[in-house]
Length: 420
Image (cartoon, rainbow, N blue to C red; front, side, top):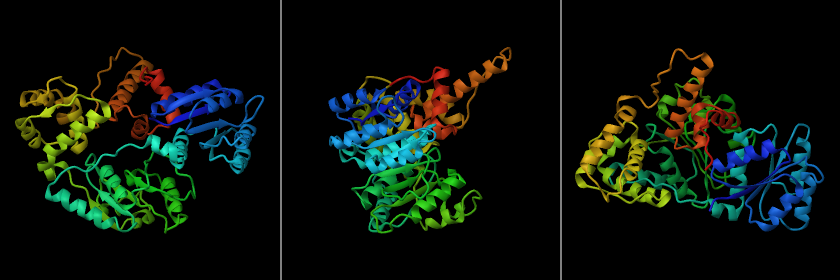
């Protein structure tokens, strides 16, 4: 069951915007416009987190927080939301038991990062939101050797750098190594769309998906976070890139201090390097999508497996996973045979084979005015990215380089935002 969050704010626009955003992130959300409604929901519901505005009519947020603490109703973290001129008050609220605060106007990246951190601090919420992670699949020599390297690395907490093609499963291997090293620690995933608080110590396994995407300010904050972290803490820092470790030194946008953090480098192989594992990968993700997304269980025939082994997956493991998912939803037949594979590959040819993954073909009527033409482009552009990232708004924001608040409004104006 997903974590349940209560949003308390007297401004309707903020309440409903936060409700939409948090629900799209997979959370259950209740809303309240004043202290009385918030207290009633808190008494009658099992909450995992409260986002509480400071300035509200009748009873303000700090007073309400004090009441809750006095009544021993403190079974979940409370994050204060502070407007202009109330930051000092929000900081003061942490003395009364608030977990943290976020400043208005809200940065969705900062808000969601704070939400995740606060939930992970709550033992019950951690149990409620924990999910089985994907695991590396295969028994080829190259995968077995990689597992052995991970096992050897697991006995220390030294930073590790993963290189490998986009889509090769770098994050899957990072999760695997984190679990081997410190099984009781969750892995925090950080990308360029997120905000990293200055001087905030790291306290969990930490993974940077594409280190070359980090801005200079994010790199500085990241280095500062490491410097103020306790080296004896039980957590590991992992970074990855499609560049190998030697090429990192040639990237002008990377600070030398960032490159020097990772002296232990591991190469994550492309799918083409271990195609003998494809039958096992097929079986694994058939079961994965059956369990996680309730897709029909279908079996790939031997001839179909051989065809897929000989196909070049230019999008690597990620592309094969998308293909498996589309095949499971393509028919109710129990078996997937070579004829169906050929049809599916042909259907996806323009998208996955002939056209580069970062290409969009678009026809625009030149009789349109500029405003309408721009709207057509934005709709097709964002629609395509939504499809590529599996309708994950967090990933979409990272891909298109937009702050989440502006992105949600744009999606709604284009008719692309649908409530889950």
